[in-house]
Image 1: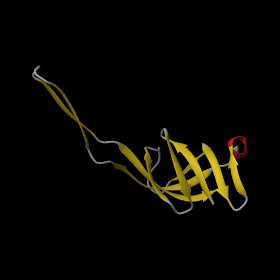
Image 2: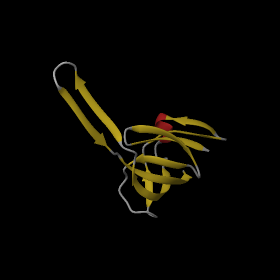
Image 3: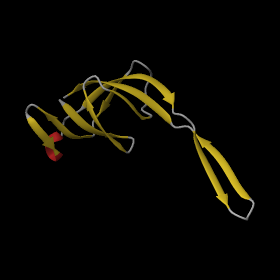
Amino acid sequence: MYAVIRTGGKQYKVSQGDVLRVETVAGDAGGEVIFDDVLMVGGDEGLKVGEATEGAKVTGTIIRQMRDKKVIVFKKKRRKNYIRTQGHRQNLTVVRISGIS
């Protein structure tokens, strides 16, 4: 069985036992998280999309909170002596999917 969930403005196809890196979800390591925004559920019974997925939820366990690798933002305007360099590290949560219902 698999599901498509939406969290942090992105969509993920998940099945039981998968490990995901998603945008920050509140909670500590070892805590449980519930994803209510399920877009699609598929499996042996067939495919459920739209209103048929109301009440469906995906549960997971938070493995750890982390930060992604640094992304360098570089801006330059030629002949104007304008150069700006900035770094950004995104906060992430690592989640193991424990069930789809």
